[in-house]
Length: 220
Length: 220
DNA sequence: ATTAAAGTGTAACAGTTGTTACACTAAAAA
DNA sequence: TTTTTAGTGTAACAACTGTTACACTTTAAT
Image 1: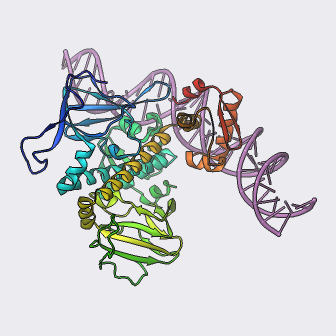
Image 2: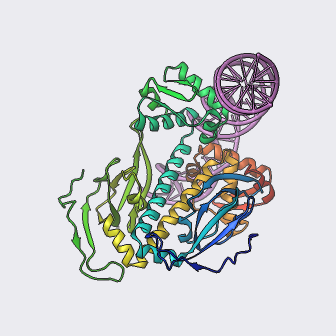
Image 3: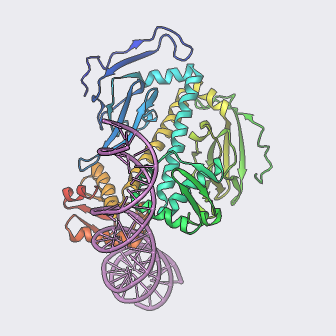
């Protein structure tokens, strides 16, 4: 499964009680070089894995053999943390090291023990998962909207709620199109139509909402 | 916020230690009648809520004032369990009683305490959330596929993995179309084309995969 | 300053999907 | 059985989106 020499099934104990991890915590750390497969899609996994240095990318192997990139994960961040507790704990993606990286691995039972003795750890774990659920829910909502103008409206109204009528987006047009799951020229067309209709105005990454009622009607 | 007479902020203690909930658990129970708003979109919530009898529906108020049904929740099931731990704990949906129902409410701090003293409770909570994350991820994958034939292929190949080349689906064509987020006649057209091409055959809710390689190519 | 690269606006056309309508069949109710 | 209802197959057409191509602008690199 992997190219490192670390024995994957041996766990050590940590030596300093830092108030977060107790000094008798059972864990293992393994190093990977750039390009290593950290996990392959279909591997089973019964430990909490945390990227502690470096970064990895995840990609999904579709049924026809194509590779679809999912996301990039930079240290420090857990790797599919919810996942070790699911009924069917098989890794859904390939995980590949983008550079030299280190992976902390804590067995499931030890995770449960940590949770019961370290409230901070428990709370942080829960918060992470809750935020992830909210992220997924919101993403699902966005993709449920069928028209391009509707997706743009959803995005801009969301920004509006936190930042008002004038704001800037971090993404350029190409990235935005990818994020919305549409073709770039189609996005440009829809946007220029919305400008013609006096709903919004855009200048590079700066957006203004000119007619919020018309914008809301596009959500239908 | 609600029509019941129970004091929403008073919590009692449970009286029998059933091995799952301890006898000093802090909680409250409130009853709702059919049609009551249990929560409104935007309400904040710092307690774990469990539907213990009856059922509720959740719906989302979109920016233009339309109502979009999300899901129906039958007892016994927690209500947005991940959610109380998120950074921004505002209810994302309306929750409405479908019939006479009872809601168990356990304050967040008490949930954390329960988790640390009842491993079963902790584990079940984690498993529930993990499964939900997996469900959302899979739904996201399905909606990311752009063509109708691709969505059909994804669905059928998933069934194939667990049940082989011949199986039946629980949904009829109308429900299936809604699930895939496409128009019913469009789904029928795509399916009959796939039948013409010798990829699948369908009879009512029975499906056969005739040419799995062609089916996999549709995922691109 | 010049060149190269990245990002954007736009148009023509093809392809897919949604809409609407209607006939037909199967299943449920009277 | 008859009637009603739900579910399905199909067609014509409209609407929308993707594809491809190219000009133009802005930014970065040489």
